[in-house]
Image (tube, rainbow, N blue to C red; front, top):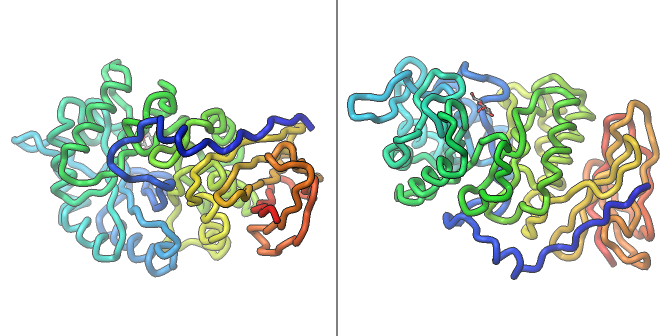
Length: 383
Ligand code: GAL
């Protein structure tokens, strides 16, 4: 196997040198739900309230999924006579303040969507270009906690100044609002967005199939060293439960997203999800890797054809490891201690995060058989 050695964890001083957005949010990757992957533009306030109910009722809220994010198509076609954005009177007749109150009443937070151009991607609602201050104040007045900011109809202006203007406007709005940049990675946001937003998309849109999910994982992997508390690479929202992949493929999707410290934004209809879907999204061992306080993005450390090892350091000297078989038949995968950052003499306990079994002492390598398109995920704790 070719070894792509793991980077050592960055020192606190090195992390501090890179300025974070001064809103104090996103110390761990955001968790929640977003309407786009399953519903597209077919959204309304009743459905959003039911999703908030389901988030609590299914127990997902208790596991950390706390943002309920409305994507494109929530607003009326035009601004009002004072230039304010207006909720669509047919689909959101009670208004966003009432919805925010409802969501907050459940102990959750409300996210909304805007665009750093003249119109949003659906073209059904206005964009915020030139209206940043006004729109940020509107979102704050409505009690919005999160803004996903898209990049359509951008008039050919480069992303940095447009996203920077909204970032400042949100900081001035009088409310703490998580800022999620969605410029699809076109201008390498990992290089400049840590002082601008709390997360930045690194790729185009995910689709609910294996080829899209694996390709996006590889693209996001390139930017691993730029993620840290306060600012995360965003390989797009989860497709788990939307039907286009097998259960093992969805388990791989969730495991790799967790390891990459990606936002864990559920994209299925949690009101009617299957037991398999709920079990994947509810795995507390895997969620704990994503939310680990060290905040270092795991990455691909070994590749041998379709057999891969991904790993990343966790707090307390532990290491998270994913053995990922991207091939079409079962295969044996070996993670070597040198590639995951352990000395050859290190003896570690290995916690299998999906079966919950613990191997008490492993040394030198971790070797397991892995089914096609499946993964095994471990936390290794040195003794
Ligand atoms: C895309 C964005 C998607 C979704 C969509 C809405 O640009 O990447 O995540 O927000 O617009 O129209």
